[in-house]
Every structure is written in C-alpha cells, then in structure tokens.
Image (cartoon, rainbow, N blue to C red; front, side, top):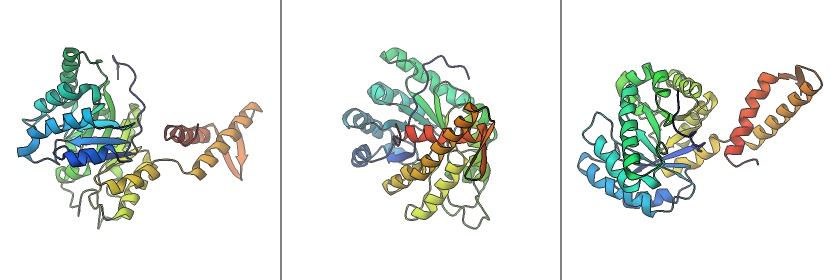
Length: 310
C-alpha cells in the first residue's frame, strides 16, 4: 500500500464508544467517558428523518466539547445512500480541524473507500486543512467485503483500522443469531472465521483490527468472553454500544501485570542467551528463542501504548 501522506498516528483503540449523533446529551456524556475512541453516529443510531439535522449537532459537539486525549470520529452513512455525500461535506466543513477519523459502514469493495478518500482530499485542500490527516475506519459487515477483505485492508493510505460489523454481517450471510454479536446455539465461536480473516488482513497491512458490537449490554460476561476471544486472535479493541462496556474493553485489550512481568523476563532471557552465543534459552523449564521473544516484545509494545510501562 503506497502512502502519499504522513505515517498514520498510533492511536489507542481498546474501547470504541458508539454515540447517537442526534443526542446532544449523549455526545456530552461521551466526551467525559473513559473510552479511548468515540464515534458520533449518523447511520444506524439515527432515524432517517433526523440524519441531516444531526450533522449540526455533531459539528457543535466536536467543536465545543473537551475530548481530552480521545480519538474523535464520525460514522457517516454508506456510500450507497443519499446522505453520505452531505455527511462528509457538512461535518468536515464545520469541524474538520477537530475530527480525527471517519468510519465508513457497509463497504463492499475498495471503490467505496476511494469515493470518501477523494472527497476528503478535495475538502481538505479547499478548507486549508492538512491533506490526509483525517483517517478512515471501515466496517466489514457484508459478505462481499469479507470475501475481499485483503484488498480492502490495503486500498487507502488513510486507512487506520477495519471493524467486524457482526450485526449486518449476520443478515448478509443469513446467520440466525439471537442478537448482535451473540452466538447462542452454535458449538464454539461462530465468528472465529470472520474475525481471524479480518485480523490477518489488518495485520498484513499494518492497520488495527477492531471487534464489533455485542448487543446485550446487560450480559457483561458474554461481552467479556467475546472480547477475550478477539484479543487472543490479535484484535486491539472492541465496540461499546453502552458505557458499561468501556471498562471491560480497557481491561481486556491491555496486558495484565503478570503478562508484562512474564514478557519482560522472556525478552531479557533471550537477549542474554544471544549475547552468550546461544540460539535459545531455558526459562522455568520452557525453551524460548527469538520467535518467543518476538511474541512477548509485542506485549511490551502494547503495554507501553496503554501507558502501563514507560
């Protein structure tokens, strides 16, 4: 993937909080939340009759609220709708300097991404904004998208992350799920294939992989289990459709104290072995080598990003 822009920021995305763009009260609450990333929604969370009016509320929220260190994002309507063009133009014109990321839903192929990418470039140039500063996240929520996710993950230098949108993917694939993100009645993790394929595509292109929503916010243990499965596979965060899910995300997608301690010991042991001309070392009865160290160096990098080590 060629990149004509500056390198993308290394953003923390453990928790991505969904916030209806039609609610000024909820926008204000999102700004004070503990989420790493907040997206103000113009798509599914907003009724068709309120979509255009909600743009002004989002612009005001981006410009007037104190977002601290949070990443500020907007989910626009899909490129197949009558609202997409206006969403991008009005929000970027009104609050482009205070907008970090645009989320594009229902992407089916790279051409959907190129439309928004080109429109952003035109607007940034016209408005005197830094060209390429506003990043993109894409929702992989159609079977067409999952079938070509490798192409999508490498199609734009603006791209920072892809997200598994399990709600619409269920409908697109004909999955009989009890609720969004659920898998009742299926023997195992019904999202394993989709998650794994999306995560591999993201990692291969140097972008983040985000796990999608879990609709039953009164089931924290179910949410935690889904988060654990996705982080084990390499996802770096998950959507929160309710503020109560933020704390779980911030915990699950960050290394624990014991993981950091073990990673430090492994990396040090392998380094000592290499300095003594050895290709492997023995740590607590387990053989470790450069491949092992590579795994645990990732743990330490993640701990540093989360502010857990210096």
